[in-house]
Length: 276
Image (cartoon, rainbow, N blue to C red; front, side, top):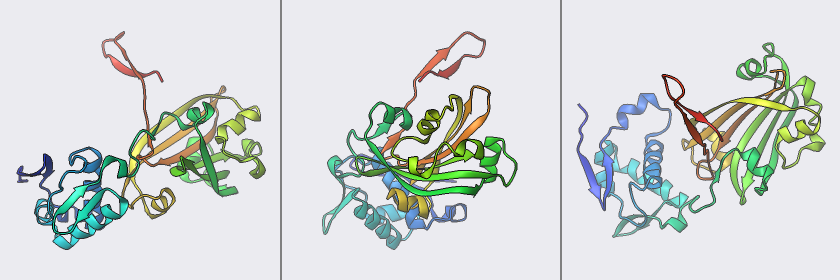
């Protein structure tokens, strides 16, 4: 039976759990798992700013890991700027102003809409492949045969000089010609398509969270294993034909997805509906 005992330090709480027991469920080293947990607890103010963190011994006991593992996790958090270690005194949560991504600089909403409204972002082209083989999920989304060729564009977008997102856009051959390499700039790809006469009518979108692999971590300048927002979107024209599929990974320190919901009570099963 899992113990419900909790250790407390300056109102922060750590629930006892064994990371060793999770070893088979995660490919991440244990110290990376612990880093991810503690980073999220700091973000959620489980450990308030400038508060004293639990000691290495307390953390080792709470998560059933060695003090060497705890020390490596804390060293990583220190390099990222989340904590400040004072020799002979203890480990403290960094002041809010020193935390990565702190403040009012987080983007919220559809990035494409915000760019259109004047959000100052820049995009760096990472790759442009006009003869890429569509991955199975992309081919299905675009209604293409397995192994179909598509235009694949990968870009890294920045907001306030910090990596915001890395996005892969896939276009079928019949619209790919509207987006030549020379035309790509900071604008969203869909704006280039609309400039060529393609009109978006609707889109299907899925948002989920995934851990950053080494490639995404390097591009977005985050730690391996850090949770990222993944947005997958397929855009359709007025005839119901899919013409763009996009997969974006977003740094949650820079981006959050905000929605307006309306309660529909017109049926026997009331539902929340997205209105903006």
